[in-house]
View (spheres, rainbow, N blue to C red):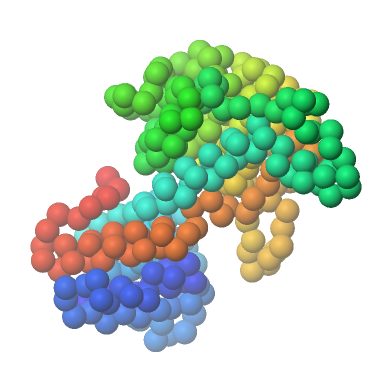
Length: 319
């Protein structure tokens, strides 16, 4: 069996994978730009392709029985290029660090760690106990938009701190940690009943721009918005207006609207001027990228390759 890892991101999962396989396999790493004829042939004849994208710039995976996305998102996969005999699967494992990222972001909105540090370095004790209160998470209602692997992990880490969890999801939610549930057709009531919002939805035609002016008008003025789903789920212009006009208190953004490319390796992450705002914490799509994530995804990728070899049902199949 030939397994091709396409691109720099996918190659991250190459090391140590052979030890997880129960079969003999040829493992091949190819560059992001598959231009050499022998690389194109290796790609087209692979039994399994591990990748994060499939576009018109890539060869056709003619012989692939499994196209294994090395992550959860499939928005960069042109599914029309997959043969009918190819099964598309994704993998997770990033829910643990993303939940920790969200917890840290929430704590930073209530406890002014960095402000206190900057001031004390100048001999300024104005944030000392007895002078000024800071906030706490206990008693706040957290709204989680998208209650999949990530949403469930977030609920598990915030509930012990006394936060109540409200969830809005496409399918029904039945989780003892969730106090109130809403459908995606009932988002106005969802927004009005929460203190902070975490967006954990994938970007699809149905979710693109889902969070817009109506959401920011419904959220309370003290709300913070944290995006760990996909940038395009939140309308960029609406978010910028809400932040610049102080209609909401702030945002923590990890998933964006513009990413580095060969032509533009160091872009600002949006054409909106988020980088000029003082109520935004910006991070470069880093929340789920830990060694733990890589190891858990290697396990899932190897599991699917083994299952394919033995004729068993694959896991995490995208219908």
